[in-house]
Length: 293
Image 1 (tube, rainbow, N blue to C red):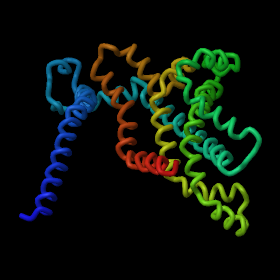
Image 2 (image 1 turned 90 degrees about the vertical axis):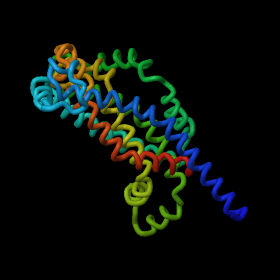
Image 3 (image 1 turned 180 degrees about the vertical axis):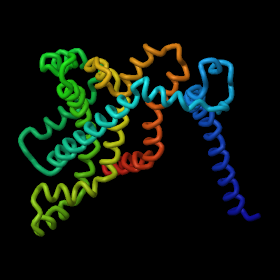
């Protein structure tokens, strides 16, 4: 065996050893993360009598009626639709406002733009619970807290703070993309008759699709999992999102473990599926943003 082939073989063996070692270290971590989810799904398919005695992964028979009861009796159908509507509205609001603001900071020079950009990004340093006392007082004075009459204002009180909180992150992700787009493309579009909004819609947004995907997915995960603000704002079941509804459901069915686990699966599974399907877009967007920055 020549020296070159021996060196190549040693390099390959080292690479295999490194991969095997990393997989060996990651496997227990993956199991520890997946075990609670698997146990939750398995428990949701059992009965109250067998939940602590049947240790099978997939019980036979599987009691799917737990999900039907959680969806109807536990009002998870209402909670699910509420979360779906809230999340869609928040994602739309964050994408619309952050993309317009990032485009303005990237392409237009105006007095105080750098200061305003810095102030907006600095709000990400403030922990969310740290602002809840002032936020609650403000929402209460504006009548945006659920007080048993009307549905529009409490919903608005839940949506606006989350949109406001997501815009700085959107600007942080989107502005480097807009900065990296050649200005010659804009000039060509303007020659063809596009105005400012036309350039933004037809040129900037399509080229910033990876960054938009990152902002949309991050905002979706945050909005779907939000609990503290919903706990402060909502008191009626017909307005609650899934996370807030799960707490109310748990208080009423604390000892009915299969039904409680079914409700938790309904709450958790959609966001897990979304992340598994769309995770490559998150990685691509963050990587592209890092390279552009």
